[in-house]
Amino acid sequence: MSQVDAVRTPATAGQVIGALMAAGISRTAANILASQSADETASWQAMYNWNLGNVTASGSDDYVIESSSNSGHFRAFGSILDGAQAMVDWVTSRGARAAAENGDVASYVQALAQHCYLGCIGQTDQTGHVVSQSDYDTYQANISSRLPAMQAAAPVAPPWSMTKMVAVVGGLAAIAFVAAAARENEPWVPRPIRRIAALV
Image (cartoon, rainbow, N blue to C red):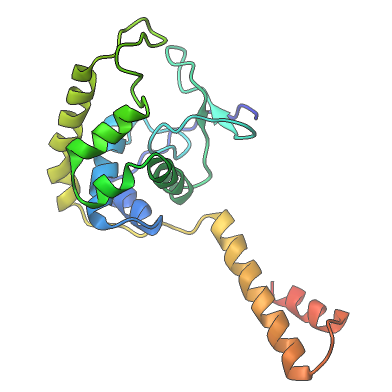
């Protein structure tokens, strides 16, 4: 894990919704996650390195420290689509996706609370604040208040990330390799490999 420069990456509601939908969730769920993202990032004017949901870093993740007042290690992403995918994966792995897909903000925030998203209720967070249910109630109200703007936004399809581009190109190369060998009725020999390398 290494620290990288914190780069502000502002976005619009349409861009965020489009990226979240491209990451595999419905428009209904994207509206809720975009509302949460807007609350986390001051409507994406204080978003850094495409981290839509302030996903924290672990293991070998590159990370940024956003400010001197917030020393948390937040993951750094190469594109808005990569950041959206990480947010969707985080929500899915914590059992909150179904509530988002159903458009149920209350159940969504309840699922976040069960995983101590804002901190565990009754425990003191790193700032010395004792986390309470009212913190989650306020968070729910903030997400709900932003929903109408998300519902009115037109989704904008994101540019492909380099990670996804490499995966697609690699997949196409493999398909072409198999097709070439089958067509020529040959074993796996260097000639088709060179042909595929030229395509890539």
